[in-house]
Length: 306
Image 1 (cartoon, rainbow, N blue to C red):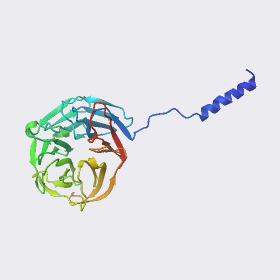
Image 2: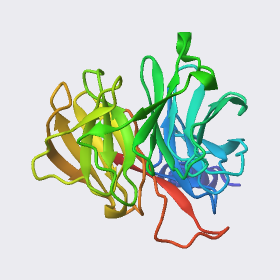
Image 3: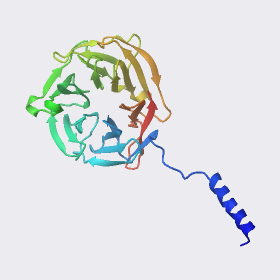
Image 4: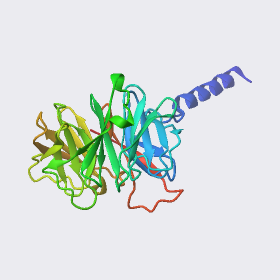
């Protein structure tokens, strides 16, 4: 090739390389995380670190997701009954509520093996959600006015089934019909529990020793369809599942009163049930209760700003 033509050809190649867009790459920390088709998600446990776990209402499988990439896999085969509310601790343990099976279990997120299992009641029940406190893992029952407390030993090791306590709810609590106790967390001062009554739309402060409850003064704010909850400092996030929104409240230190600050919605919501946070983001699995489930029904997790 003539030297001048060679120079022109090289210049054209370089220009094309400069103008060509870089190769496509996957979005880091995607806004939407895909779950397996037909999975029927309900609960979420997140961290420590950018890892989340989701439970299946279909058969209790637990699915692990890397928040950085969205990649995931089943790490624990379910017992054939649902996995609903979940929490993780810093020792790689998942505490899982068993829904209508009336039970709960603790699963190793390292191996997927069941570390401990508990039958809370053999009566009609729906063990719905769980919160980890210093001395106990507390589970709600949406069908009965009571909580179940699993003792936690040194380093958060779950106690024996014989040591589980049943805490009847009294005071201002009205069981009513339909789902009652649903999401659960602690008060900002960590001295009491907060439980949302989904049907009545009330938030209750629960004495961990006696079970006596007092309705939290939220003014005219209703938490109807209240599901999973997340407490960050004195800010309480309450998922209102069928309303496709998150109520964000500021509480006083003792959790006796609060006020609505804002409501978070997103077009990607399709009956979100529970919530967990990583950094400035909230992650919510969409249960899609209004969509008939099939083996091919898609399910996903939505990420929104706090």
